[in-house]
Image (cartoon, rainbow, N blue to C red; front, side, top):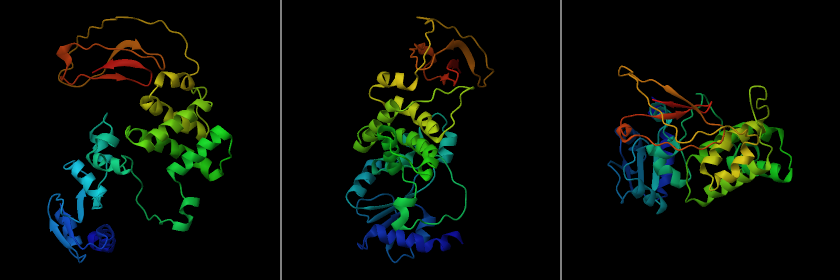
Length: 304
């Protein structure tokens, strides 16, 4: 029932990607083949081939990444679908933006599948003539916010309301780590400039973030620091009040514990002040034995 309902959408998408070539549509999975075979185009169940006009696949495999990217760059059509939320749930600690198979294909095309989800429902498509004016756009709002910070340009109430979302989107975008992409480096530069010229909120229990601007700055500060070409120069703008704490050098920790085959977190009793760096030497016997070191939000060191 669902496939029949969406058949017109699938057919329109396939014909748009085919661009009138009337070539072969390669389909990896049977359910999609059953629907697309009614499009009037020649559809075949096949893995990727360079002689295809359109290639249809899911986002759950990273086979032929470079070949598919070259295929699209040369004008081939790619219809790819899937979600990243389940992968993110089952691969904690890994970066979906760079390690999820679908994003390995899509990132170079300026697209990414996020691990976030949206509520089910009917969503009205924007009117093209009004889309740029009334619809949230990541790049447009970032440009407007940069002008607000650097030149004092006023933001509308609608733009103010979208700043928290913009901060989350910027943080996700920075995780693509597309250092060889001009637009990526441009956004890193823009966000760095924003952080250096903004009054970064120094939040604590008694001084929480209150405004959408505060939420935006806090969302992007840590991510910009991670990808900044000169993080040490950026740190004083992020953490303005960093009290001097005694530093311990060459401290050796001996851990002797039996977790009975389970998983447990053991505090080392050591803490790092905000922005502080440390270096750790791990015994060779621990390598590839699933030991992990974690920095918690309180900056304590835990070992598992």
